[in-house]
Image 1 (tube, helix red, strand yellow):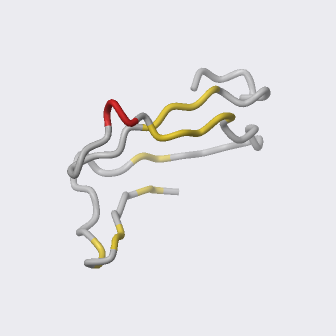
Image 2 (cartoon, one colour):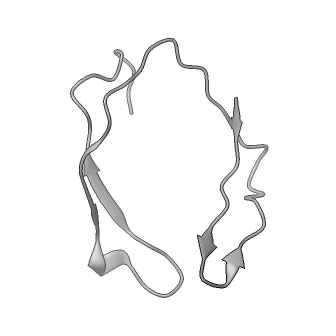
Length: 64
């Protein structure tokens, strides 16, 4: 699976991300969802959103 990012807001959709060729993601397990996902107001402005989170309990043994 290749992943590209598209931002969406009230104005519409951005073009897809162009940094590199995307990321190839191959999972042989299902990791737990991140915990405590929250906006980091100190790193959020009109151009970017800062996020913080904690790693889920199970990551399949791979670093996140």
